Image 1 (tube, rainbow, N blue to C red):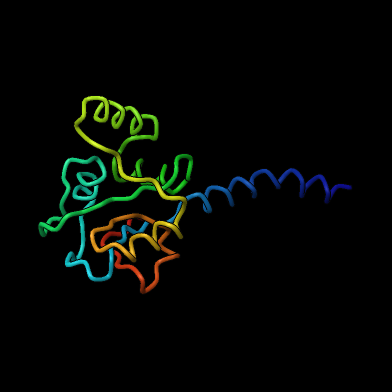
Image 2: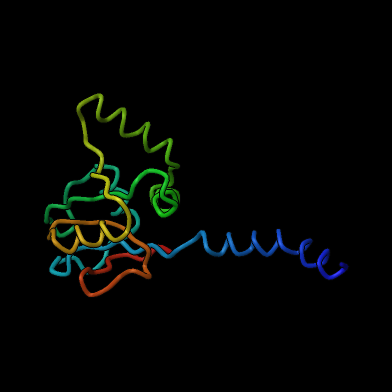
Length: 144
């Protein structure tokens, strides 16, 4: 009985530690493999995803795509790169859409959909878990 008590008293800490380490993924900003860009900075990505520019730095058109609301990777991306939480992003885009000054990125349903879409669209830019990157896309920025 004592060992059971010891194990169960440690269990919450183990679960918490596992949850924390599993909650953070490296984020890869991906583009079509034929895209002329070699890399992007966090600031350039921020400008694109906030609709402040419609072009890659080299001048080509950019079409960003987003992950679905509630996705942990989306929350992490916006917190780390855009420095806004999901409610702030919704409010930001609501104001721009209402004023007729912008349209938020289209939303796709998860990493696989984002990767497949970007692989087919030369102007595409999206973000996925870095572990899922393969030869169908090109990484322009990695966010730890």
